[in-house]
Amino acid sequence: MFIEKIEKEHLLNALQKIIGIVDRTRPLPIISNVLIEKKGPDIRLITTDLEIQIETQIANANQSGPDTAITTGAKKLQEILRVLPEGSRTTLDIQENRLTIKANKSRFILQTLPAQDFPKVTEQLNQAVKIQIQQKTLKKLLSMIQYAMAQQDIRYYLNGILLAIEGDWLKLVATDGHRLAYVATRLDQEYSKREVILPRKTIHELIRILSDTDEMMALELADSQVRMTFSGSVMISKVIDGKFPDYERVIPKYSNQVILNRSQVLQVLQRIAILSNEKIRGARLVLTNQNLSISSNNNEQEEALEEMEIDYHGPELDIGFNVNYLMDGLSNLDTETIIFSFGDSSSSVLITIPENEEFKYVVMPMRI
Image (cartoon, rainbow, N blue to C red):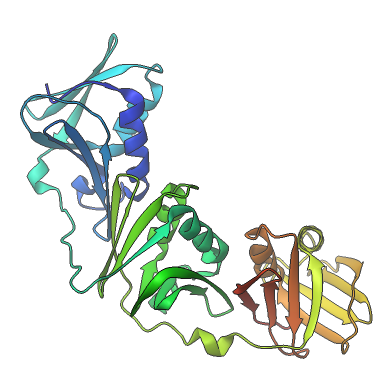
């Protein structure tokens, strides 16, 4: 026996942590497999897409017998485990390059590929800067800005998030050239300066599998890799090799401010977006004395307009923005109030949070 009488929930939960990076479309078949290793009483599962590697260990597996390892189709194994009855005790057996899965009166036989052919990522963590941070803190920081990452931009360094360690600060920045999101948090001590760009896929996987708990995790930032260790799992990711834009120059300081209810503004934007142009997604914001009007129109000559009473006494402003960009920012915050800050009618808008000076979201204007 390879793995004997393990609860299917333990095996399934471990597999679901690491299966997000599995890619069936890759020309290398073994990339769609999961590596299952048994060492002493422990079981370890590993997946990779050659850019990212995630491994997790099943706690208290209490296995006996010789050490061995095999790879098999990750998605098929997941589907099998999902449909097995709750509480099933599962046995995995290797016979002649076939993996037999037994549970109750069910039996499944899967193809395998040799464990020695699995392309494990080689660690390159020389002179890495290592920090400790709560899982829920990093998850929240990433969630607050991830929407501003570029998608398949020719400027490859925009297809991810900048992680910058400066003294006792961890700063995270995302931009696609049309908007920029910045957030920062204090660390427990001062560290050597280090900047890396984590790829988009790595960011989404971290948000998916990090827990909303106070449990600490370790981040090791090196020139070409980042290793993250948390909850019995280890993720190793390549970093994007490139120079991230000077984000500090993009973040403005404006004197024209208005405090708004986040949910109220978001609902107005959602209604206005219905009749916005499908291609440019424009929304027009007009600020006058104690009034904000938000409007949109489209190629069918249809229009939407909504007005809000606000506490504003600055100059009259008439600015166009991509309504989706505004909604992205507001949708990923959990605060009750927000601050919109403006320059003039050709300037960006700066969105901040009253109780958190370390969050900033900048959206560039557009012609409507």
